[in-house]
Length: 293
Image 1: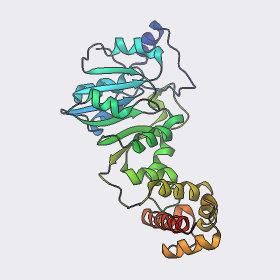
Image 2 (image 1 turned 135 degrees about the vertical axis):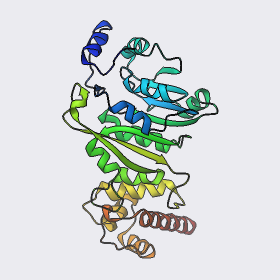
Image 3 (image 1 turned 180 degrees about the vertical axis):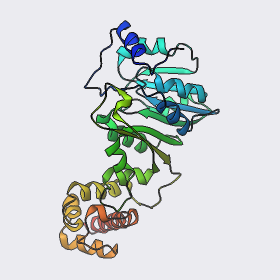
């Protein structure tokens, strides 16, 4: 079995297949031998579990997942890596490579066809440039998975795992906390990759919640409140949310009063419950307004 953490081995394999790194795809392959075993173990991969991996690269993490889980399905966008993976994963009969885009593939269908009877987890070393879109798609699709374990840029990890209602929180923080319980697992230095990125990374885990910790009568309105508030986070929520919903400031002030939320707060000061209360009262306001019209 080839040592896929050895730089010489990696270069030899990639050279054999004429592969060169793509900056546009954010390709950085792990060469630190301690990272992938730890990541695979913490992801929840084990007997009775199937794993969806995003962007297997040359298969370093894939091999570790395949040693633990019943089945691994890796979604890889870059066709040039298919012959590479065919070589590096030839010892495993429980791995399937799907050449597709994780942002477009039918995940519900994939899980139904590939993991019948298995619990499913997601594990991936995500390219920095698509971190938020991928995480949000995996959460918003409400696919039947237990957890999402991903390696992302350290700064993004800190933002995602920040406590809602603190200065470091963002719209993504709120969204992630709505669907899951995020936690920071460990950090990974830039020297652990080839080529080495300019920043360090971190592995985070999102344990999917059975139901949101707050009750939003209309999720679309809830996330519009989040988007409106954080889009103009330097402004007070009275100004930012009223602008986002095209509601007069007087009406917005009344909505905030009913929600028991001070109108001079800013987005990062709002708790999950306060956001839910605001969104529920906006939904009620819109319903009453429509009835009058």
